[in-house]
Amino acid sequence: MTFAPLPEPSPALLVACLCAGWCRTCDSYRQTFDDLGREFAAQARFVWLDVEDDDEALGRIDVVNFPTLLIAHGLDARFFGPVTPHAQTARQLIQRGLQGSLGLIDDAAVKTLLGTFMP
Image (cartoon, rainbow, N blue to C red; front, side, top):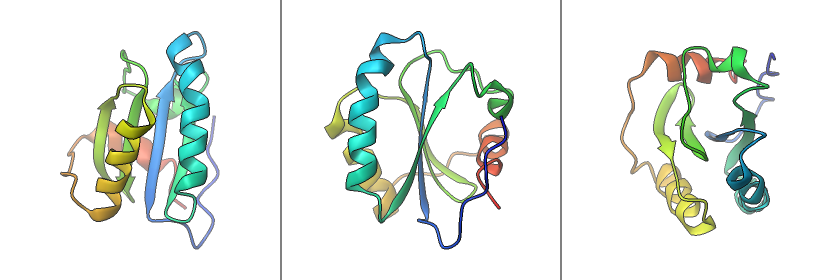
C-alpha cells in the first residue's frame, strides 16, 4: 500500500497506531485511538496501520506487541513501542510529543516507515 503524502500545511506530530486485524485488543482500542485523533486533530495527524494489510510500508519492522504507537516529528521518531490500550496512556505520550519532551529514536527501519508519510 502506498500512502498519500501529507497535505500542506499539516500538523507537525504524527501518531500512528500499528495493529493487526486479528487482534481483539486492537479492535477495542480503535475507538479510543479515533477519539484521541479528534481530540488532537489540530495538533497531530493520526494514522491506523494494519501490520498485515500495510506490510510493504512497514518494511523490516516486525511488530509483535499490540497496540504499538509511533510518534514522530517529520522523520524524527520520538516514541515507538507497545502501549497499554488506555486513552490516558496515549494522551500522555501525545502531550509529551507535542511538548518536545520525548527522546529521539535512531532506527533506520522506523525512518523508512516515516518516509512513506512525507511529501
